[in-house]
Image (cartoon, rainbow over all chains, first blue to last red):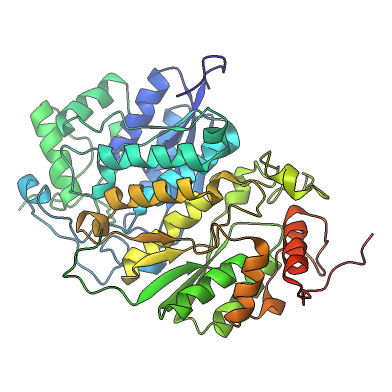
Length: 236
Length: 236
């Protein structure tokens, strides 16, 4: 949609949660020659260790800037990921994950994240917002699916100055159709320090190995025949 | 789009900035019999007096709940509305406003607001998000136009649990095609305490009368043949 006469932006906003997927998406953007403006959103999640990992990752990836923004979604409740009184499901099979939206779904989370990413992209002149969303080996969250990401991009084209001026902000989800094993391999190829990524929905200090996020991550490493450098609780 | 078998929600989230338009949109929702969950977003705007007005308005409207959420968009810069070093334009004619996007445009502001509104709607079970957006007598912001609001609603239908389950969150902009004079009359009909609304882009203590927002507001009152109860600086 960008007009031919406009120079393509050399920078991108990357939504960097501290997890493996967002770190890998950021590494892809860097590999494409883009300067990275990393944006981490602290929304009151249980796994605040992710936010600390994001800081280390932004540094390791040589990000041009890194901001951590607090957005108190936890005050809205509605999710086991932000509400300590609700149980995080454990031991769900990947097949079951694909069939129902779990209690760890955070209402409109990626909508909020992408909106903030778009605001930063427009303020900094970045051409795109990279997100580590994945709709193959995933927890069944609707806001990780390509049809949502495309629809959000269309909304941005209509509702931002950049869109109206013919240089719309693009949403890039380079992992959206990859398996977790492919993501592990891509991360290693691009030198992502996987020991600094945190995926477990619980707060640590070691990963539980049983929440959806751990189940999917372990499956990915197993299928990629790679050892996960992150420590897990002794397996049952 | 809502399925016939699902009872219609009796509540709505209202984005309540403290300005006249959002207060009137909230009053319309109340008039439609909805319980109001008011959401005010403090994004570091110059006119923080708006946030105080929002508190009074939520009370006057009998809102079931009122939350003020801080989202530091001002840290992203990019707007005269959040950056004290940039000049707020004054004395622009309504015709000129319709022709260019001014420096008071805040990157992706309504995208961020609607995303947070949607998150709260999904967390509380509210059926819709009301916004006071207006595309007739307005500053030329692209995120106030119906084509954006529709596109955002479509994105929500694809990216939220509610959307996937066939009960999508609706975006309601009851003022979007009204003139400012019509909004003034509607506000009076619904008993909006206009003395507690604040529109001026500058911080007060009295309205400047010259910024886009004051120009449009004064035009509305003049055309509605009503006196604005808000104090203005002595006119030039």
